[in-house]
Length: 116
Ligand SMILES: Cn1cc(C(=O)NCCN2CCCC2)ccc1=O
Image 1 (tube, protein in one colour):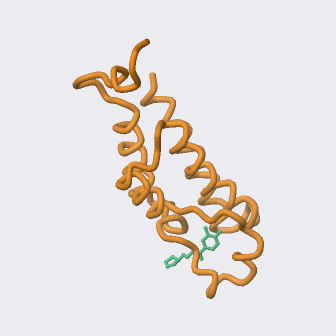
Image 2: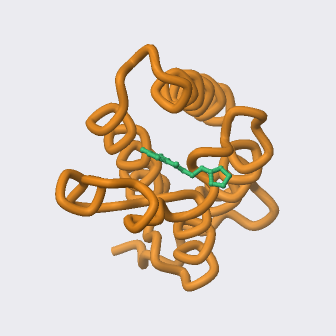
């Protein structure tokens, strides 16, 4: 049977390259400001109780560095968690709620483009 290692394609962009490319584009997006660092539960009343699994772009950056993502799918799950948490806690027409929708649309569009 083909070993897992054998799946690596020399020189081709593998899944990890796609994750790093996508994360870089998310971090530098003008509407990324609510998502760059973990939400500070002291300065956001109710957040700790409401949001069971906090996630943010700096934590995702750290998980990539620590090789904690096995595939693009596990990376995508954490990115979606950022935006799902945002929808749960913020009104759609709030500044942060609007930023979350913009960022999620941007992510899905760029991911599809990079996988084509
Ligand atoms: C994702 N999210 C973020 C916040 C938030 O206030 N983030 C801090 C944003 N500030 C920008 C410059 C310093 C910090 C609140 C609710 C929420 O769902």
